[in-house]
Length: 509
Ligand SMILES: Nc1ncnc2c1ncn2[C@@H]1O[C@H](COP(=O)(O)OP(=O)(O)O)[C@@H](O)[C@H]1O
Ligand SMILES: [Mg+2]
Image 1 (tube, helix red, strand yellow):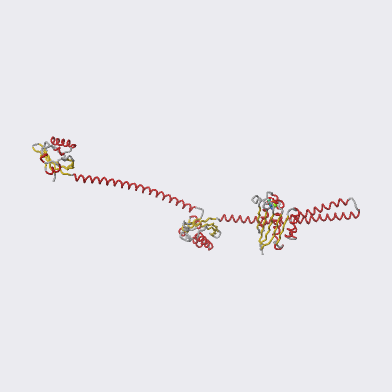
Image 2: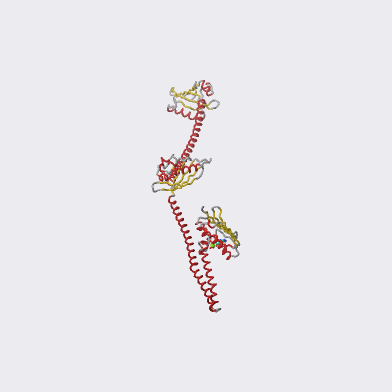
């Protein structure tokens, strides 16, 4: 089935079988005696010639017995892939060749297709590999990012922990039912409890037997309110041993999610024992100060009363006695001597003494009207208004007194008088008012004092009195007296709109 061709030492064809005819397109007749070149493509002819020469000269045929692939040439010129196995023999010292030739076009084509497929495959593999490498790279990058993120997370978690645990404040996270989810180191140290006994228990059970029932109820109430979405603040006291009671200022804050539900509560607490003590100390000293200043006021009233009495009973009486003697002297002298030169001189002394007496009385009344103690507050107010009217004749006072003298406690009488005195004096001095309305009325258990003028008013934001010498009984003093006596006093005024002073006291049964 293979083509078989034999050649002579001169390279001429001496045998050509049928298959060779079919393969190369020449008949035996056509080729016998011709050179083998007719079936060798031009580009191989030279190699073929030199090979034959080499064999002839040195008796060496490299390819003998081997199979090799090469290309042959058909009669019509197209090339054919062939496989040749060569053998040679000698006769009379001359080399003869025989080639067995097989058409391998089909195989070649198959091989080519195969190698094509292989290349394609390799391409595909390469592509896939590149893909894989790329994916791999991406994966690696992702992993790195993940690790970074993880680290960052761990770092921030660590920082949070530090903050959570090192803070000055007691902090815990709670479920809305009061179960402890987290608790910080400060809290553990502060309450002398440990983490594992605290987590997953109710907040109010944490301190076990040490917790007071009052605290338990307070915490339950606070948690319930916070779970309802309210920020709750309260103070709680904890007894640590016989001497130590500490106060904590707590807040429970609901953390609400976008749906408005409250999945978490944050409780914070701060020890305010010292602050509390300071505050109490401050309140205490403020209280003492108030007491002191009320005592000062009382002492001042007493002192005024004493001076007033002494002026009245001492100098006043002396003056009255002098006046009486002088008057008597004038009378007796006029009887003895008749109209003489002395009388007019002495008579001139009388009004001077009278003036002195009145001045003393005026000073006494201003210091502390004796009527306040003798006749009461209502009479004193009326007297004071008359006096005021006499001085400021242009200002009309409308009085409305609707309370009984005995309904007003003795201590309040001085206070009320001093307020009326200052208010009216201010109106006289500062207001340019034409009218004053003064009401002292009782409504239920309230005693109201209300003094209004229609004058120029003033700006309340400006500091009250700039004149230090009158301090103690200015507007500030009025307020102070009212408050010290258990009442309240408000001042309303606006430039151009007059001034109103209102004081109110709660009377006992
Ligand atoms: N009835 C009033 N009408 C207008 N101005 C007033 C009235 N009462 C007080 N003032 C203003 O308030 C200031 C403070 O009053 P006050 O404390 O009694 O001090 P003082 O009377 O010694 O000035 C007054 O100086 C005056 O300007
Ligand atoms: Mg004044």
